[in-house]
Structures are given as C-alpha cells and as structure tokens.
Image (cartoon, rainbow, N blue to C red; front, side, top):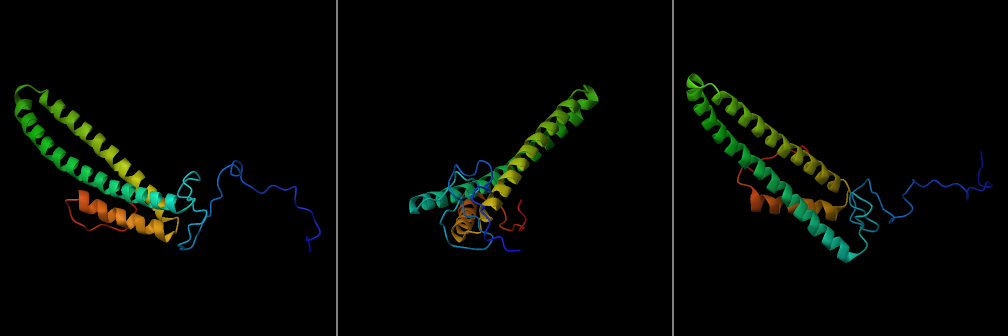
Length: 168
C-alpha cells in the first residue's frame, strides 16, 4: 500500500523529554566519529574537540579509579584477615574464662563482612559503568578506558596482572 500521499506532519514519534537536550548519536557498530556523541548520559555530550579531550581525560581518571578501588579492597581483605585471626586467638583464650570474647569476634567478623560487601558492590557498580562507557562503541572512548586501566594498574596495583574478561 502506498502511503506517500498521506500527511504525517502532525505525528510526534519522539521520546518524551528527549526533545529538550542535545541530539545524541547512538552507534551499535565501532566508530571513531564523535559527532553528537553522548557518553552514558545525554548531558555528557561531546560538542567539540575541547569537550572530547576533557571527556577522554575524565574516562582515564574514572577507569584508573576503578583500579584504585580494587586495590583498596584487596588490602582491606588482607588487613581484615590478619585482624580477625588475632581476634579469634584472643576469643579462644577468653571464651574458656569469660565467655564474652566470642561475641566480640563475631561482631568483628560481621563488620568485616559488611565492609567487604560494600567494597564489592562499589566495584560491581563501577565495572558496569565502565562497561557502559565501552559500549558507546567509540574508538576514542575505548582507548581512554584501556589507557585508564593501564595508568590505574601502574599507580595502584600491587598484585597479579591476570584478570578475567568479565565485567567485574
């Protein structure tokens, strides 16, 4: 059926609230084009060379920050393991005499588990945010993520460089 003679000028196919901000170009294929590139949010819009350079530097810092969080988590776990080992030794000795030492050990373990869970949640959120950056499919953004991982590892990591390809 031929619809070329019909007037569709009155029909609005836009998304609610999307007409007010910048036009965002969303690519599903790899590209180096930064025309109308929005990074994660419509408000993070690349409008020129300056905003592109600033955004790429911000992405490098964000990604390096992820490596810092990972290292903080590893160090906290190592510190907590040593501290809990000392608490367990003390609670074993005091439990035979006083009894309350066992509760102090459990409280310390619960607090440690909560802190570790918070650090883990921050890492997961952070890693998925970095995945969203990568999913712009823009070569410049992808390079900035990789450079940020490199810089972050150099600056913060004290452990093995082996990492799975999972998001977190």
